[in-house]
Image 1: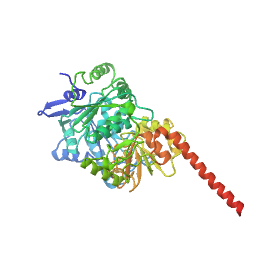
Image 2: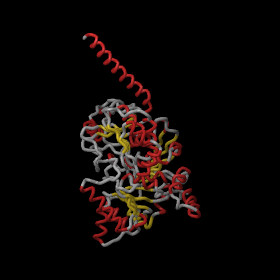
Image 3: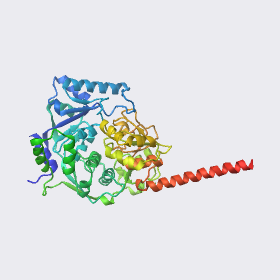
Length: 495
């Protein structure tokens, strides 16, 4: 019987079918962080249980860690320090690999796992973090789990899992210049809604998806959960294979031949049936930016905030009104030109080397606007080192960006990188919820290129027009300076 890629992955990892909708699912890899694992380890201890397969666990300190550019990091906040200490203690006790606070390879869990060859096509990967869907970019089924489920996985290496429905999103054509996979996924979410993929595992396919780099695909799969998706998948291709083999030297000889044969079958059968389908034209996607407090409240940067009277659904209307109250924007107002005080480039969505190269290409030898505080937080120690070796870090610092240490940073206010009340931020993160980046802070999601443009101008800017915009700003500044100089000269002559 023809099967989808999702069905194949579930079938090959089903230990036992529990009923018509639930299976006992085996996990190839389980990833933990410092804030969703403490209760799970405590539960194991209370029950007198051990970790079933320590070698198939990995842990990292990333959410609570400060990112100040110091050589040795110390977590000052007492409760956060306890979380990190407990994670180190638990990992040592159970023989689990840990990327700790000052490990040179420390970073965000969804960045370091792929870059170290831990994620391979055909795997099932679990983590107590919703953006585990990132791994679908490599043909692996990844999804987030709750704390009680973390305990179950530690004890059994399995999970009681409710099987999802299948959704296929086809994107054909090519993304225009200035438009990225971040813009594509924001466009998709804005169209199908924040609950549009609820209950589904989404498979992305089409010529536009094939054209994306592996890192761009990670951004796409990472944010699929913002449409409610329970998983996101892209069938592995030559790009996937090259990416994995470069980072997984243990796959060699006979193992490599077996792996390649297995990976070649990881695709949806031609006659496979999907429960829902959507189609998009990549050529029609523009740079996107959010205007509200949910990732689906987004428009092209050249667009405007929706008119309240045009939203007839009662719940949608209430959500719009609340979002506008929080963001301080008005119905019908343009997104271009909205002033920002902060720019944050980082997170598990957009903190890989490809993202930083895009930022550097926009910034070049230009300067961050005087009204903006701009931060770049690489996704891992490896990304940070590579950016420094390529000269990206030096370029950004010379332009006025802060170059930080790896971590989740300002993606969420669990560390000391956060917005002050009323501050407006151009952010490359995945969520723009109220208070997500700091109590009273306002977040506008966008691509790294768009965030770089905002850092240079001081307001939300169409990155496709950045050269013309900066030239106009330079002319205006020169005109003002010349006018003031003329006034001073005239005044001196009068005296």
